[in-house]
Length: 153
Image 1 (cartoon, rainbow, N blue to C red):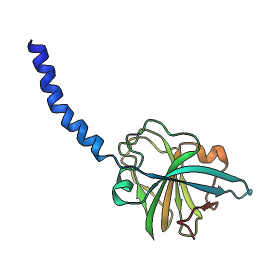
Image 2: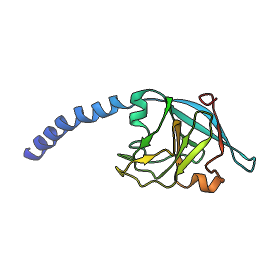
Image 3: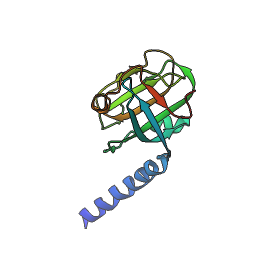
Image 4: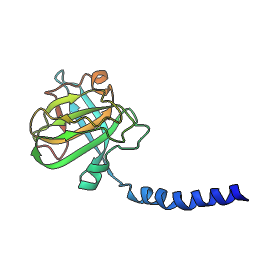
């Protein structure tokens, strides 16, 4: 009887907390983008678009898996130096920092999950593409390659 009462108290405490987390989760629209490498190869991805402040804040946090040809494109709407971190992100990622014209400025490859260290762009960026760690090396994507998506001119 005492054990059951304890379990009920724990459940009563945890359920509202879990519900608030579930309610806080943002949904993202999906789109496609391509990266044209310096060798002329085209790499296609399906991406979730983080275009609102809440979506950009949530990003890929708490995800446990990411399909090989998918990612998340952060649209900052304006061009400025950008810094990201891996707080609450369980997956190693490649972060591709992208200029307004779609040129990849720099790539932070194989980021450290759960790290609070700042990961910065090498100049003013319009967006950041996050894909699974090691994807850039596997597909031959490098700084200077071009991202084709409607947010880049």
